[in-house]
Image 1 (tube, each protein chain N blue to C red):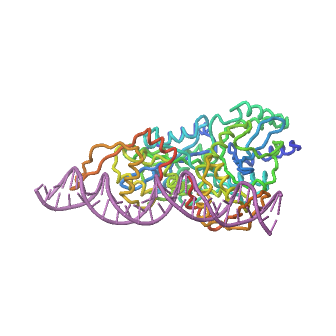
Image 2: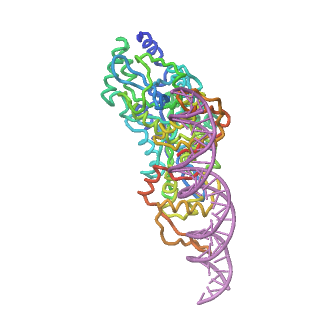
Image 3: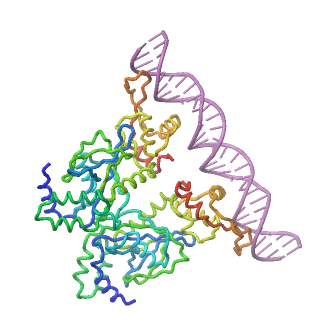
Length: 263
Length: 263
DNA sequence: TTTTATTATGTCTTTTTAACACAATAAAGA
DNA sequence: TCTTTATTGTGTTAAAAAGACATAATAAAA
């Protein structure tokens, strides 16, 4: 991808961004029983970053986060919530070796005549508000941004080297997800429209990081009265196939207000 | 209070603040069975605001919030946590009539020669991170800031007119308090060292906005094993006086990690 | 000593959680 | 068509927690 023109564009628009304010999106997806997070890889070096961006002067922050989400995944109207703001003095590009190398690479990509702008922009103190999004992996079509060579799902247990304080941000997002599990649309956002109870259970287990009793899980979930039961699934295995369920929007949303009880 | 000199001070230091970034503190206190929030009243007009401030370039945001807390209450090492960042486009001084009047007053207080600085500073878009603090009312000695004529506890059910989006911020803080009640040091932070079980129950009731059974509350609390029992209280009433309890730091902190179960 | 009113605890019922068991069943293969 | 398979969906119990209400102990005042 030719990044130079886009960089020029950015320079041209730099005055339209609120200085010192950025946002990062921790986009969670669930695949093969494992929770993944969406990351971007910078050109030429093995350093990754969260999708994010700056805040346009005339835009609501959530709207800007939504744009990031849309540009990386093609998805809109996705569950998205602010969960913490990061402002530490040592969260800048000099925080760790990966960040410093990445910054040098970025600077090389910048046009010679705009080096001063680069420095003053990237050396200022940034306050970044972090958002958490939950999406269905198979619905997303991933697109890298101007500074990155690719955009990939990475399992949360095998995170690569990350710039700035992005590792910390992901850890905090995971913790938020775990603590707030009863108030977030986990099943509806992370699973396909139809799913089996075992799939739902595995999802909960991967977030809570502990095993749950299958029978009890199923009973408790079904008793909530938020599921529609569908026809059977073809598994290809020589055994009984499970029922497929989908979530009834209205009763689900009502229930989330008081919380779905899992500990 | 002579505010002119302090204003000059502020102008002198304006370059030492991160532009466009502020912080607000929702400081909760508990008195006479009612939850209160600490507010400042601007000079000459009946408009109030949350204690807050700007972020010095060389300071961590939490440290700055701590300073606000200390300057208003004289207290340090208090429970303090970030809970949400407010960045809406329409949260500025023109949001409502109270804000506009307050801004005019502030501008009048400003030195003539610094009117330009005033305008550019107060007209920029501000991103404000809101903190929540829990303190013991009787330990705090309140001090107004340079722009305010007094600093007072206001019951959450009778909030006065507030500038900017401070009413919204307080509402969100209350909601956070309610949702997170099992993970926040409610009793230890808001009550004096020694308290009766009924006092603790009333506190929970004022946050959860519902009545709790006295017997069950007491048993559940005592079973947690985090209380030290003290000698009796003298009430002056012609009936049995209740025991006083205090909280054992260590076991309390351990327990908070998993949450104290109240719904 | 009596009165008083409130605490601290008791009892009972209902609900929830937890651990484990097992029959029904649908798909595959013979 | 019948058998094999192993996973689902439901059952069964025991233990724990929650909820509603009752009552005895008790400390202060009269």
